[in-house]
Length: 131
Image (cartoon, rainbow, N blue to C red):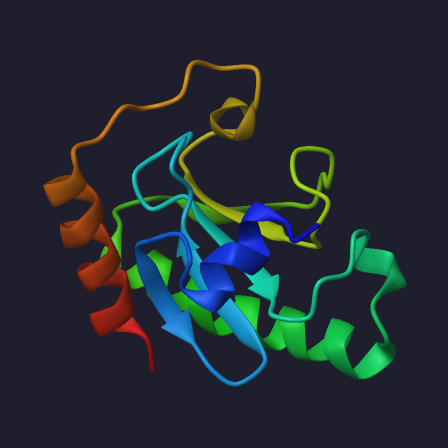
């Protein structure tokens, strides 16, 4: 059965996309820790990030770097934090979270609730900031 991320890749479920190419996709987390919290995935469905083949793994991190630089330009923050947890959805993914302190990337914190308009504005700002 396809994961929710594969359904997003196929266009079966909507997402606020910030970047996409033939092999990778970046979209806003619908339960963000901070405005601009973005998920970066390979379009190929593989459960564990460390099970990706070398080319896909390397490409995923290069794609994530491009997205993180865009987030840093578009969202006021000290840094863009990175987390690979992999328990929520059985599809390899990287969390990119704008942070101003170490506890800003604590996944036990309450998540933000944003309107569809807010998500669209944030996604557009990040997308426009990509180099």
